[in-house]
Image 1 (tube, rainbow, N blue to C red):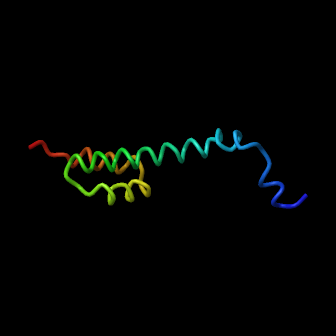
Image 2 (image 1 turned 90 degrees about the vertical axis):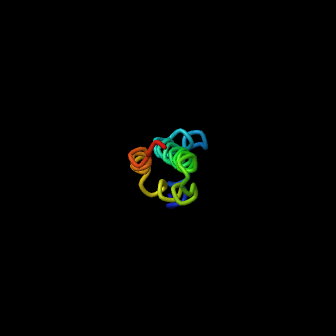
Image 3 (image 1 turned 60 degrees about the horizontal axis):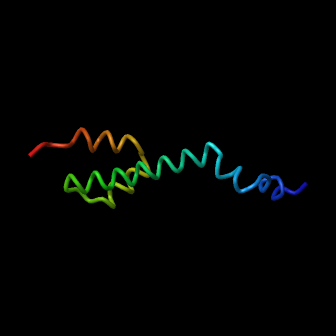
Length: 70
């Protein structure tokens, strides 16, 4: 059996429902939420989106802890 055949086993539904897919979807959603949260706080959303892709929920913690009421 060729290596490509081994890697391509399973249906698209199996791939979409894999734990790795859920993890990636969660990470991306957190990055989007952080970008919106950053913009609400007067920060650059794109920078925080990219940072969130790297450090995920820790970026949310940083944003929340840096928030200052005006």
